[in-house]
Length: 125
Image (cartoon, rainbow, N blue to C red; front, side, top):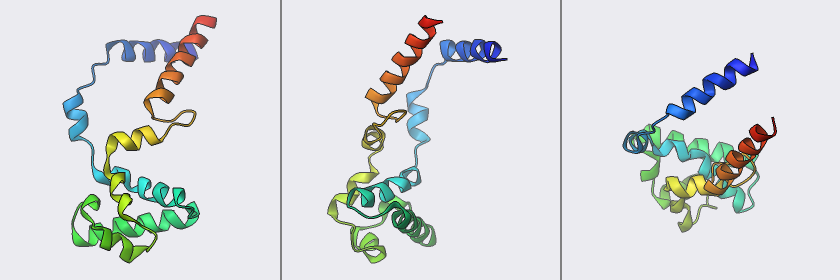
């Protein structure tokens, strides 16, 4: 039931102790492949195109057996000429999180709002 699920979730969250060092170790640049697509969307390219372009970047990195964040600007421009020098900023995990600021997003302010909304909802029960 919902009540049981809430009780379990409450117990998990109340005892959760994240290990920042292990969380940082778990990050990998390929997690940011969608940020390449989002980068081009911000440049005015339709997402239906950027999704395939990002996939081509992942494929190139895999073919070369390198991490996607080690592709050079020239490599990226070889896939799509609309990549500019500022594309290299997409490889920052914290900035990636903060760029997602819409409702339900991962930006700190968005998460804090979600937490506050949950608390308000719980208090209204």
